[in-house]
Length: 206
Picture (cartoon, rainbow, N blue to C red):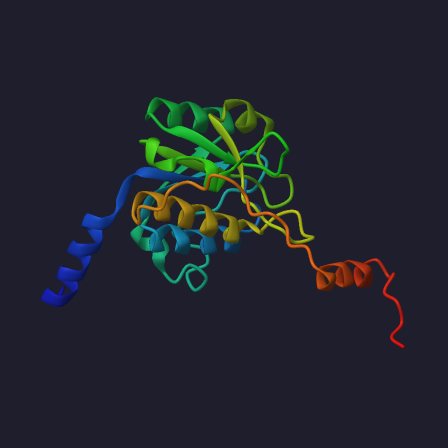
């Protein structure tokens, strides 16, 4: 039996669900990475998740990583696709704008993309090691990257999903405008000293 308090909570959250956006995970190798991504989908109100299986072993999103997902996978709507081409065709037929993440010089910074102007975004994330497939790259309406300033070249899968959906949530729900430009680097003696230390050129203290 569902209590009135629980019914009221479900009703409120159902009305807040974004039924236009979708998250697409292509050929994810580790189901636990997918489960962590499901938790972010729920947290930011994205209801629809598509999973593409072509090179990797299929798994049932309802049966994996319940602790990792915080049991949120039972509240999401999943669609599994056997093959990337079929998935892309289905997403296009449903009116989605394909926004694929890739570390690439030709990609656009995600915060600079006006997500408020995209009626039905489908955010596509590729395999943990290979990234998105050539088919996804060719079909994408937008190739985007998540700005970062560390020595690592990319975030892990679940973090990428969380940051992407946070940006989408911020622009569409919180009214945050797209970023006009990226921040300029710092310049000081302390920053130069840090660089020297990293390069092994730090002068010994006297």
